[in-house]
Image (cartoon, rainbow, N blue to C red; front, side, top):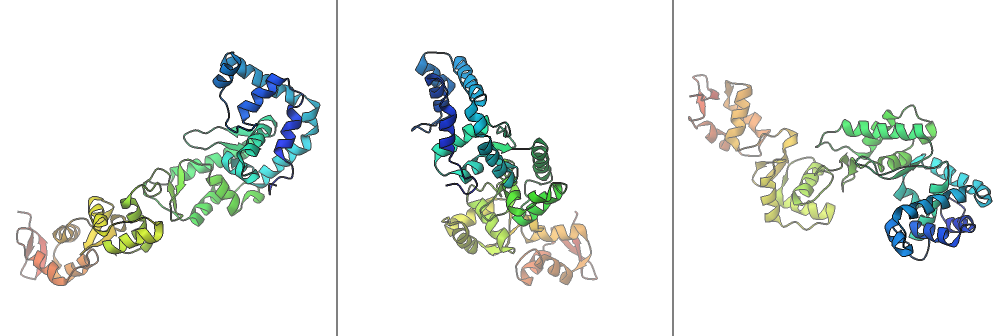
Length: 345
């Protein structure tokens, strides 16, 4: 038995369908997958079965639903439908169709019977899936609008590269809906609301961001490598990255292949021998000479020691490597005081 309702949906729908004509009952049974075959039939498929148009099937379906709603059996089931409404309200008042049905029953047949009850009940409203939201059911229009708006606002404030923890996202969401009834303001309900969105998503590490971002919709080794280094929080050798991909995600990553993939992606910066950092951490791309040029573009006439100190924050290399690069007069000048600048000629 379901943990959120006490009645059995199949028994309820059986009572509701009892007064229908054989054909009307069969149309509803086939349209909602209420029989042994849980696959819902299209209007066209049912029309072909009866030798009538799909529009005629639609008329029969609509008339059958109206007939049920006018019946004594339907009136008698008011407490049942009210229980279902109370259950939805306890889950947050707005919930994705998939999650609601799975909470009510694991078997598809019972889920189909529940869908018929949701369709019949005046208290239940459905927002069909679109580019922003998954199918979801709700009780209150104002609540639905508030949740939909909050989800849109959170999405609008995220960049393609942003990743935030689930707890941070929940706090952002609660701030968006701070005027809602206190009974809805809890973590489990917010998670249900977040699952309605198609524009927000969670990656394998449990971090949230834009759903179609490679940081969330992980496809290949480079994306897994990005998440592994980000989780580590500091530069990693490509052999460590390869091992982390296996440890975190259970994905096999050959070390040489991993190295080659990291080189090709601008999200990563080679900061030492086989050592990679994320460019979003502020590391300058390019060879050591490029790093020195960037430093001197910001602040000229620096001493060798000052340049070494700044480069060492960008690259895990020996001081002598930096000194050798500074000796290249095609790129750098040194004045009588031992201070360096870019050779602009």
